[in-house]
Amino acid sequence: MAKDKKDATIRKRQLIAKANRTMFVTVAVAAAIVGIASVLGTFLVREMLFNAKVIGAQDKSISNLKSSITNTQELETKLKSLQTNSSLLSSRANNEDNALRVILDALPASENTAALGASLSDRLLNVPGIEIDSITVNTAAASTNTGETTSSAVATETSPELTTDQATGATPQSIEFSFSVTSSSPNNILNVIQNMEKSIRTINIKTFRIEQNKDSMTLSVTAQAYYLSQANIELKTEAIKSDDTKSTTTSSDAASGSTTTGGE
Image (cartoon, rainbow, N blue to C red; front, side):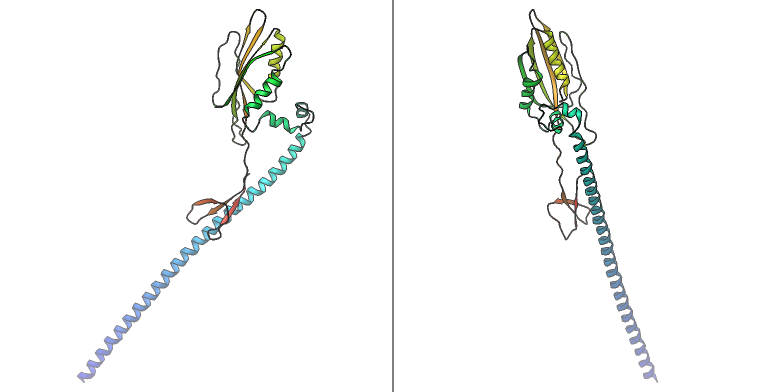
């Protein structure tokens, strides 16, 4: 009787130990499943967010390209209409030139001080009865030097500086130049001033001085002309990474996802 009772106690302990082991294994397996599910869930969420970011960048690129195509078509239409513009045609230096050449001459894409000096001597100052004393063309000056004036014996005139192009954000750069001419007739001096007023290229007269001598009159002018560096439009490939960093590359990266962006 005592032996049977002892055996029953041992079996109970064995069953309890077995149940504990089963419970431990069950909890461990459940914890592992929950952990794996959490990791996979986090990974899937990150992948979804990353794919959404790539798709958003691609949509933006497509929108930019469509806008660029539309803007290009509108620009072509406007350029064609300008080729027959009467004002541009009448302002050509040579009748054989394209009307659009006037726009390029009015605001060149480079400094080209030699061309500016030649234009002064061959066109603006090329007036019968005018003797050119000196022409000086400096390199590009800072366009922020506004409102500068200098006192003169007879008169001083200032014109407002060109302002930043609001449409493109580009700032015209200034080239400072000066010249001095002499003539025995005031009308010839007046013709020089009128030539500067009629010039298709914007000229900002900072100072001018007229000196009357016994047999001649001298005009001294300090002024600025302008040029605007050409805009560069190019396509670029931008790799988008999952860690919210971006790097510009020249080829697509299939592992990290890539998108091509177009400039407007």
